Amino acid sequence: MTERRAASGRPHRAARWPWITLCLALGFTGAGQMPIFKRYYLADLPGMAWTADFLLLHSLHLLLAAVFLAWAGAALGAWLVRRRAPTALGGWRAGVIAALALTGLARAAKNLPWVWLPPETVMAVDWAHLALALAFGALGLAALLRRAEHVR
Image (cartoon, rainbow, N blue to C red; front, top):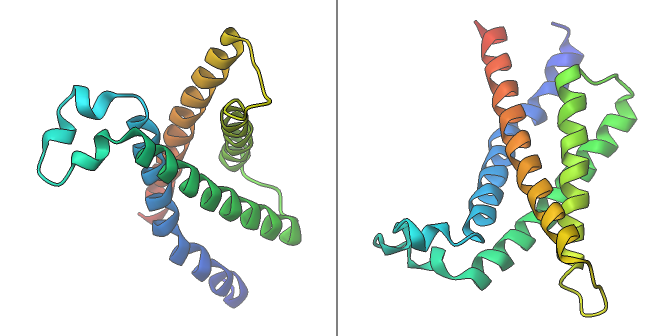
């Protein structure tokens, strides 16, 4: 491995766990907006009562989404500077991130007072956002497993 590649990989490795933590927190707060934490008694565990507070989880999800978009935008900018072709898995992940951002923005826009969307559209956007979040998680897991194969 050349010295340049080793040096360029260090920030990527250092950012891996904060990125994973951010994505897991987004998944947790996103799932919490469906009333599953109270229904399945997670909110009844000591110290977890806050998970039944929809407004808190919604606000946290929006804050984390802003950090996610900023981070993804910075990664896109760095990728454009490097001008290297992404791997197939990287291309899929980038596409899912873009679609997640679009559906998330549509979900946020539907709450604005001057925006009206038909109920069928709202439901389609909600389901698409959920499906894309699951796909993003599956692709992230595939990337971790692929990386583990290369380490051996």
